[in-house]
Image (cartoon, rainbow, N blue to C red; front, side, top):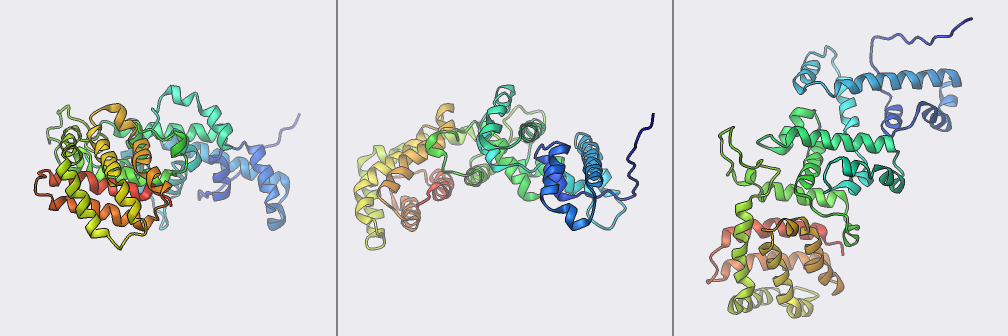
Length: 367
């Protein structure tokens, strides 16, 4: 009885990006070979089908071996990279970046959900809905959960912690920071009226909130490492959320509301194509924006933040056909004119709230 062995010998680890993508997408060796054949690689290289099969299997073995390195402590990973003798970028870094990459269609399905076994049970349905293989869905979900577990108890910058512990690029670390931030605060993103929004839209808003609405944003977290205070960048500043109730005076005090409207209308008269619509709907829009702030003391209202912003502002403006330029003019003047209200004493609080909200609303508004 005879046996055949395929032996590959080499002194350099090569990562074929096309094969790596097939592996990340969850294709079996057989399916990957079939896809490579259809790409015309046999004609391009003159290789046989048997060689292509062996080449694909060798790449898959390499990827499985490298995958185990992702689960060693970050300090060991850094040591491997620091002592890499080659002049070029270590193959391991290319492997890391690709391994932690994700499909927007997938992340959009799990964004804001708890990264638990319950959500993991839904991966079959998500795979069917998105057309992403179940194996790839599991890899992406496990990556999100792994990053969350590592950084959830850490102090300091969320982006920096992710970069340092997972060796990700700045852009990918920022995306993971958004995913972790949304999972921690359980923001609702799955409602039908939010389906037009992309992951990029939510990630943009997450970055603004991390920069302005968390404890880390204002340096209020104590230095004591034994403190039980909330994590700086993952948790919203509860004291700030409580203080937002003070903004209610802007719509509860009729004189302030009327003066605010007068200031905005005077500044924008002749500059907005939808001036009449804005003037007629000013009080409703203002009540909507201020009431969103006043309700953020409750966890449910925090979770429904984006639903409320779309219902209270985006949809009314869209129904009146506001162009994005008019939305920008209005929000800028609406925010700035509060500084001219003599009876209002919460200017810094207002700026911290509306500075972020203005940016989010402009990103959410697709005219």
